[in-house]
Image 1 (cartoon, each protein chain N blue to C red):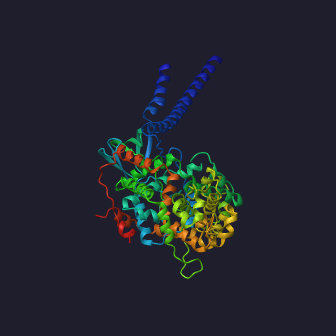
Image 2: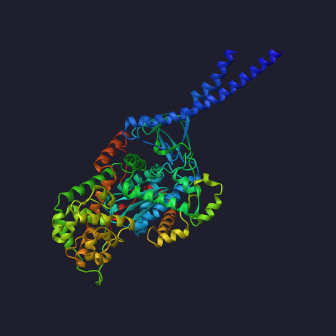
Image 3: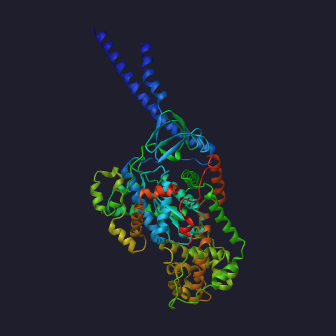
Length: 160
Length: 455
């Protein structure tokens, strides 16, 4: 009975703990996995956005990770504890009134999505008072969103 | 029989307890392990650096609504910043700085954000970031930069403020998935007037961080550290930010070594010779902060140019930081006037002030200077004080002088808000060394910085 108890504890408690590790996810377009926690060290491998890396050690701005057959260090600059999300935009929803927002979130004390800021009317008033300039902000956003990805790629790699 | 049933039941209970134990204990231990792993991270890093590098240690938002809220909040602050300075109307340059930002964003750990960079139409040297991805860099800052890597370094620094949610943390805003709700929770909880007031207060809080109190020193240094890493990961020379900071420090020394009084006189002499109402008169631009700072430095000569100004000045040290000045306790009436001016300035924005400010501070003198101030831009509120020569002309000239020294002023302004540049330079150099960033294959240009910025 005692043997059964200990083997049960060992298999259910000890083994999972021993192998438990935390996953982190690459957020940047790609992430270098270095052989040591330094950008100067050898590149052990690369991972791309969304890849899950298993953390085995942490320290000084770096995570020691395992990724497939690769073991090495990834800088915290490139990763996060949750999988990457798609782009979030609120431009299209900017005209929504505060009342509508309030109704829509009737159950939503729990949802930060409801924090929409001022209504369009309030924004216009504030803009006219010179306290804020929402129109210029929106124009700026619209202009910058229209930069095509190819242009960024070309800019980033001018030699190509 | 009875005993046997009891035993069986006991056996079942034991097995049940065992199963429960087997499920609960590992769960608790796993939670403990994750927690302690996070704690270890902080501990280790704090041994290596005097600053904790806090990467997503408290605010990992996974809820799309939280991020939308962050963007909405940031856009309110961004609109206020634009309202204060206005955007510099140069589409090519704006697209260019955004291309630099997009390059950096590819190495950012917040792919869910669109980063939007605007150029503020002001001579002051500064850059700002608001939650949700809004970055602003001033025309004055771009003017002092020498290459694209310096621009990238500045944008990367601001990007880290956003990615690390420095303002959000400072204001103790928490989202659905980020722990207990505080400020934002209150905003979310109710609609109508209460909601708007609370929201506006939060926006005010963010403006205070950006324009008055500054970030926490550790946050500023974290932005330096990670900003340099971000820039270098994007292929930019990491020492560029050091070059930029050194140039700013050097320009400050250069000015210090100059006869400020002479400068002041010269600038005064550059007056347009036209008073408000004259054809061709241009409304002077500038900051009251500039005036104050100049006054501090140029006492001697200014006294000759506009005697009243010197009188007003004394030991004035405010750079748009009226409050700070007040705290220091100003004894001279003139100084107080300037302080009030600065306060008004802050409240109403550049150039809108003057009258209110002066009325607050210098009752007696206002009688002489009021007309001038109204025309001559609040900027010169300080100069108005005393207005020994109460002509419109002298004040207008002083305003021009203020414009001319805006950049110098801003250096002092930055020094107020940040750790000293020398400390930051040292910090960045240590980062470059300790992270193995030195000697990589970097560039200072990807686009055509000079073509876009130095026409």
